[in-house]
Length: 490
Image 1 (tube, one colour):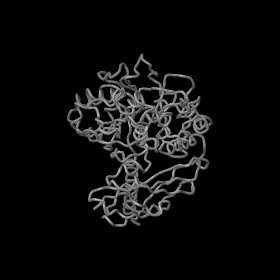
Image 2 (cartoon, helix red, strand yellow):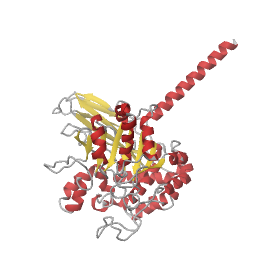
Image 3 (cartoon, helix red, strand yellow):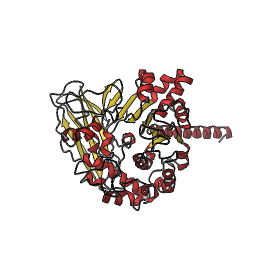
Image 4 (cartoon, helix red, strand yellow):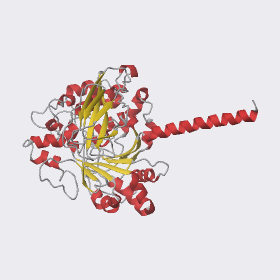
């Protein structure tokens, strides 16, 4: 063969391979959510960080930034500027085993490089430019990656506000572009800076903003809220067996309840004992982004492990309140105004039906969520063949379908498989709260891989019906994943 022709063929082949690799990498990248965490280092933030690190393979972690809050700042109940360091050191020790289960886990060196100190000197302080705020600016101004960036506030929003103020002052021409890829998930508004700066200066861009109060379901008063049939997953026996003991150095750092009255809301007759679940009030911020197949991050009303939310104003989503004639506050959604916190403070144990309905968007999943946590703890110490991994639920068709009243909808999840070859159980069900059709459907053979149901004649054009394909494996612990079908009535 002519040498030049051979070289040309080789060049084209290599170019094609590079193109395929680049496309594959782009596809892989596009599947992962970008996340920046800001945290005030409270004891339940430390608990949340353990779980967060065990799921770090599921996202592109762009930053772990220490901030302040109305509860914690330097000199006031402060955990220390380097509170996250022991957890990152423990992560480094279990990292060689974690990557046996998923090679996408970020390296300890990388996580350390994006763990920085933000605005921490006072509650709501946002004047100082800090390494944490500068890092957020750098991520948001990076034009090489236009995927959405979910910025979570486990504490106050002041470091986020400082970063956005820097962009407004130094790059005002970039504000609209930055806002287009910004997403917020706040665990309450734990200082004034969202109302005093972010909303007045950036509200015109209509940034998707979730402000969560449902988190109280798994915060310090979980023993009053978690349903009786699920509460066993939070008791000391379960926690010790599945998380705290014999699961490596990271899980051993988990700040379980230490016993006694430590002013964290323990009540007489509580199931809390030494070693029981303590609090993970901040975890819904990232649990919301775990790709279970159930959730759709840009659709907060869909619902998932991290809760379900309704649009209250502009593009701001808060917790659904079932109390009749309730009026949401115009300002902060926080400990002084949020419905759930006020109920637990002022009304409990009366009208518990309202409490159960309010927290149901999270409590309905907590047993499945805890089993998933237990599997991740196993990944710290067990080889792939000795641990369980979630099933992969695959449909043979689109997740979004159209159908006419009286028409038959046929759904097929027969391509579903389990990485460990465990037997699988199927459950198809209607997610009534997420759909707009007010009635019910009748699913034929809901325990099989393929199902069908007729669209009711009463369904109106434009209404939606949400159907969930829920699949649980027979491994230990049993793990569950989903696919959501949205059927729009024509």
